[in-house]
Image (cartoon, rainbow, N blue to C red; front, side, top):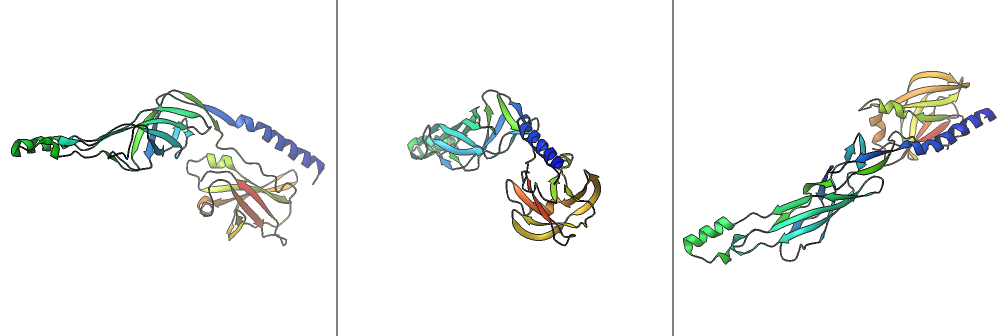
Length: 287
């Protein structure tokens, strides 16, 4: 590799690394922002099974999105406590149960204080109890009300207690990969093309190879595991710095069924060349 190309590549790499700081931005999570909370356990206000101050396992039931950015992720743990509880009573008096949402966490690790909660009352049998007492002259104490029950998966809303400035990262951030720095073949996923459509159908790559070589590209590895070869369709070609840049694409749905959560590594091979040169790249896309 020419020394000038090396220096150019190194300069671009350093610039991108230094510019990572600018990829972060701040979005305001306003006071009284609604947050949906889901309980993860069953509660029955009976005997001593539920007590005031008891912690209740719960989580955020859907992403909290402001200005197109996720500030609190679905699944974030929510601290919920039993605010009040009363047992079912004689004379048909129903049981009562209420919960208070205390706090959760934003994507940048801030503690987000919450207001609001859930109030659940058992079905009252007071009317039935009084009616029977009038008809058969029974003491009221023989008929009990129903305990307040709250099944797991109950969803209620809470609200942010104040405003917060939440640091978010650019969701189009590219992960820089130098594993094929000195290779005769390299590839880059075109993230910008993905962001141009709300529902993109294709992954597009720019594959750089020497001029004059044969070319037929396949994806044959995902996360270092061999997969059934998938053809990359050539869309266009151009020459840059004495090298050939080939634009290729593949349907997203063909790849994602082999993806794991988090980062994924794709292996691309040029089977048009006898020595089958290959390269790999890391895909930083949330699936």
